[in-house]
Length: 594
Image 1: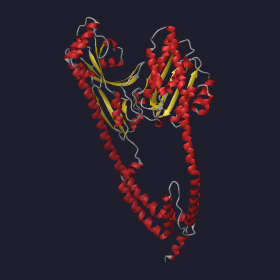
Image 2: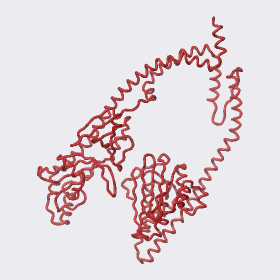
Image 3: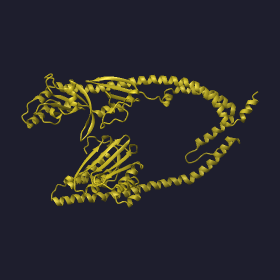
Image 4: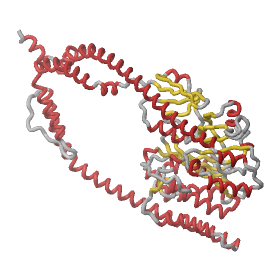
């Protein structure tokens, strides 16, 4: 009875046997069972996600309320402090009188211990004309033109939570303030007020560090105050919560924050197939075993002979090491599997021969490559030492001779700071925080040389300061801006140095307002910078720039990218872009002045 079907199956090609097995024993059962499983899993995941979103919204609401309440309580202490109120309303005969009484106030009222040491930036404003602006006390006239002051007055509130974006020439940043009237002893009559700026960066970072599994937005109206989407930044203006984001919202909660209503939005996420599998792993394993039982029985009856040989062939692959493949001890059968086993033995013999002749030779070539790169780095180091030394010393010497004075002590101190770095090549990698110190030292030396003809500005985001770059690379670009951009220019000029992160890319810019370059020169120079090599370094006249570009490319695995923009008579800007994943990062001391 079984001879007919057995013979039919024996004559079927292996591909058709597997197709028959798949259709009868895998596909049809899986379609039915998996449909039920997916429905149940999606439903359970949806309920679980909603519960998790509720918990996230409650946690954020509690955390923000706690921070705002702490700030409001501190403002209440200031509001009701009789020493502070008396100091604001006192009659001062002169600035000196104010200063002396201010010092006594700090000693007697414990103001510094209770307020100045807090984590808030606190400023009190009064209409007392005897107050000298500075520290924590300012005159009301200085802020009457500010938008936040007008909004607070118009609100009619005694205390107001006020988020806003402050943009000025020196800095631009997001702020969230607690503003309170100070009329405790003259209810409704005094114009005095206290403004407390909360640590926005800390509040934002706490939400990011919580690593919620959902996107979260905290909004004041349609203004996004905080989020964990990775696009926020203290130095960027507040963004808008769009209607598209509102459509994706799964949970929203509101909270009253001292005169304002903040909304917490937790966005839905798309269900991940991998996440579903992980969350329901045991159930899926059970169903998988059930679905494989029938195919396993049919496979045993169809073609038991080829399975054992395939397993033997697979075991041979697994036993093979990186430097040798194990040959099969015996080849059984003359069908497709037997031919495959014979081919494997032939391949293993050829590969083993190639490993002996090629693999070891390749290792030697790599060792030689590493040695050559080390030699090139040493050559680069030796070129840098004299390049800056003579220019800097000559500038100081000429200035001293012309003016016949001993003012160069400060400049020599800065020069000594830099020269120690030129001499010490124990490590070629330093943090941007340290590198900026050398840049400022160099620019101060050049400012001493050029006088009022040279001004400079350095802007570095704190998030960038820990990233490490090759030593003296930014100094080289700043030197190039001075020497080639401003040295022969009679009019006053500026040099700007900026470091910031644009998403996952570290950006370093050096800009000057010097002579500029022709388009042809810009094109040639940018091409040389992006293709810097030892050969180009030998042929190029701009040794310092090519040296810095080559070291940056070598330190980042050729991931450093250089952009050059220049206009004749207007100036030049060089932008260096490096993916942060190609850089090492270390800690730096925030209280260490540049």
